[in-house]
Amino acid sequence: MLKLKDVDLAYGPIAAVRKVSIEVKAGEVVAIVGGNGAGKSTLLKGIAGLMPVGSGQIIFDGEEISRFAPHKRVARGIALSPEGRQVFPDQTVYDNLTLGAYFRRLSNDTLDAEVEEQFKLFPRLQERRDQLAVTLSGGEQQMLAIARALMGKPRLLLLDEPSLGLAPKIIQEIFDIIVSLRKSGITILLVEQMANMALAIADRAYVLETGSVTLSGTGKQLLHDPKVRAAYLGISHNAA
Amino acid sequence: MDVYLQTLLSGLAIGGVYALIALGFSITFTTTKTLNFAQGEFIAFGAFIGVTMLLLLSGLASTTTAVPSEAASAWRYPAAVIGAGAVAGLMGILIFLLAVRPFAGKGGMNWVMSTLGFGVMLQSIGLAVWGPAPVMVPSPLGDDVLRIAGAGVRPQELLVLACAILIMAALDLVMRRSRIGKAMMAVAHSPQTASLMGINVSLVMIGAFALSSGLAGVAGVLIAPIASASLFMGMGFALKAFSAAIIGGLNNPRGCIYGGFILGVLESAVGLWQAQWREIVVFVLIILVLAFRPAGLFGQAAVDKV
Image (tube, rainbow over all chains, first blue to last red; front, side):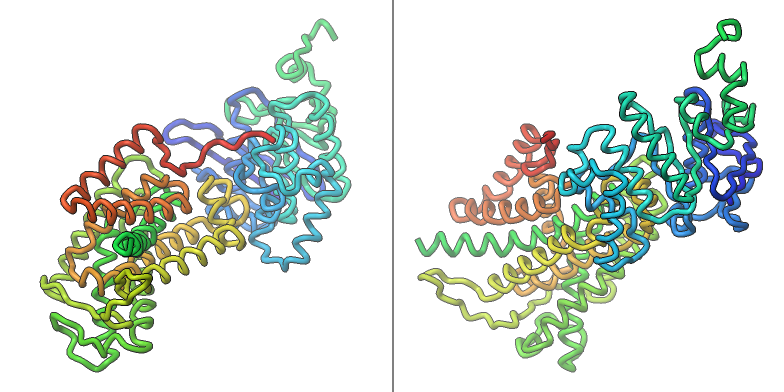
């Protein structure tokens, strides 16, 4: 479904992602784990079109999209729930959700029905329907960001650090939702610092270090890989 | 008493024009973080496009120093208002593509110089086409002074006020209620995040410049029967409108509208007392607002958690 071939991404002269090649197949949950500043978020921005691709190719459903503007990639079926939520603070929960479906030009009735569908998945948002997004808690904003991305009916959902700054109980809630999304058949590319949780639900995963892929395998393989355990799970070789 | 009512209505009329132009400043500032510093020339161009349309539509020669009153009668004046708005809107698209987009979002203030330069070019082109002489423009409602509760009011002032309120109310409704309005709010908050919603951000920005410039063009035709059309008329109006936007808060469209009316009434009221103090009072007010409310009187304060 999604293929990156030797993709380079840079902030001006500073390279953030070097020669990254990854693949996401339809129906998979793929995780990208790695430390701070490894280039994980940059990689998702590159896929969504928020960063220009320096060199290499991004191919989605057989079509090269490396030079497409972000709104065209959204129209192809790629939605990003960005790092730090980025909900529209001065608009209501309902309006935030409808913006997620902006490009689909739905009738008001269909739009309402689809918003209701998201409320089934995220009941907390229903209670906050007419509140401004700025008044939501961090966890609720994260749910809103994911629901808003889903309103675009994407075939590929990019999730950037959904656990960032949230309490463990809320993180568990968010991950339960990701698992249920996978069951509904949506393909997910998940970027996470909480490597243990991401690897536990991922079919496959890549480890990104200073902008390059250093390891890849199934979620289980990486979860038990001594190097990964030492570097990202805080478990040393000997203790295990 | 009647003289106060007269002052108030005149102030509201001129304030309505300031408000239209100030709203235009706010529209481009919120969506693109840039301002069209050629706005003054767009006002003057609007007035002259209106004049030209009035003359052409009534089959008269295209250069003159006074438009005869029958040329502005019936449907011709509304047609000139709409035509000037449309042409100014197209010019707004041009200025965005040529003078703003190459520099927008890249930091720096290049767009200040490039829009100013665009304005200077426009003025030169205008002088070549229409000449430097001001043109008297008749009001479609005639020039007989109306008596309202003893106060003498020029009908054009009421027309200006009514048009300004109508246009701004319609825009406010669109901004707050329609999908495109919410998309504009999204772009204003963050163009990047808006693009993730599948919103074509460049198109919204082009639309913002077209709308903002169109408002300036409309303002030009509305004010021409009061101030007469001149290629040098724009600077003063644009500066006052910009002041109104600063008073009301550049990032708040409604605030800019209130700012326009406040400035118009204040100016008119001070003029009643001492005409030569008008400008001084206006700019003292701006300095006070900037000192005590840097975000403007109606600038967006942080929303509290409920």
